[in-house]
Length: 188
Picture 1 (cartoon, rainbow, N blue to C red):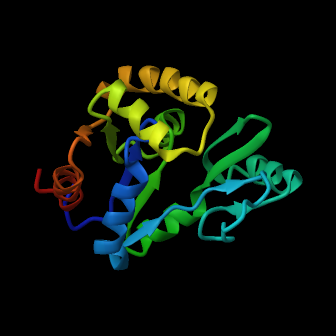
Picture 2 (cartoon, one colour):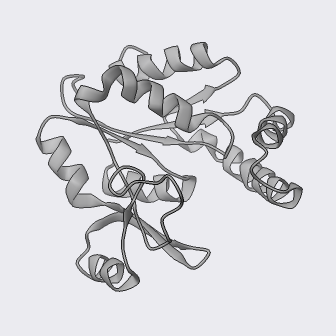
């Protein structure tokens, strides 16, 4: 695919690997040419979250109607709430010549790759499980049992990193971003 053609970029990582930070850095530098895909959810809005920026907050009936109308590139029910990636917005951005950036979990990434086989998939890898544990603990947002659960999930996700087109080890943020930027620009 020509580097001038709009492309869809899938970025996945275990919680605490720096995926959101790296995506935000890319958006800060190339935001005028990237559409950041905002997911839909049926969960309640959390303090500080903004409609259309963090999520599109929908009631369950509206979400299920979108499922029926095949409006999601992927969707899932997680802990009783629905989450989904609206396909029409992705297609519209690509048709307008914009690249699309998806910050999405491993299961969602696999589904997106089936719908958009030319998508560029990138897995952000922590330097080690020990470093990931340190980062999650330092965040101080989750109790120990949630951190342990996240680490168990992280090990499973990391085992499937070879299914991605690229793997970036985020041991130094600047180096990890330089690699992400090269992938984005098609120079890696």
